[in-house]
Image (tube, rainbow, N blue to C red; front, side, top):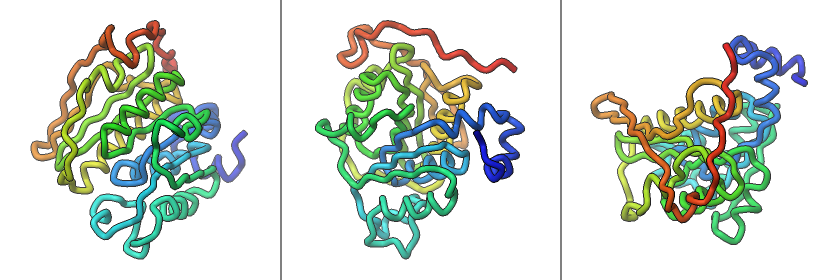
Length: 252
């Protein structure tokens, strides 16, 4: 049940979701991989929306070069662990939710334990090996995987639901070369908000998800487009999963 404080805090979005929808968000647990450029807006907007439990994993220290885009961290946080900095901000912005931060590197030895019983995984990483590992975990656990990636003024996002959509390996069979890529803060801000919106829609069974579609943002042209993507029956990650029915959307 929502407290009187929560009813007041979420008053404007309860007009959209109803109390039942807000209670669904309160019961949800979302795993966010990364507390950087994408993880910052994703976790902030999930927190203010009232997602009941957020687990945030990162192993880096805040550096001066992070501050043009990683809005969870301030100048005073330079040298601090990103998990410590992020937990402080998220608890401050919404003390009514549960925030768990884990300072570690996500690898194959502990990814299942880290994700635990989360209802979904948000990909806020900056490298494809970890993205593929998280994708495999989502497929194995049969939970959604909300992918996002950025470079410069360009970004992409898609929502992966095991058994219903292509997985990340279907869409990107080969990882791009590792590089230190340029990025300006507005791009992860926009893509992160797309990812957070997808999380909310999934949990609320509302709207049309970015399933079977890759959203492409060109900030230089202020232009968005989408590319249809399909499952690969021979995919080594999800090829053997039986198709499932899409989640029922909320009736208007």
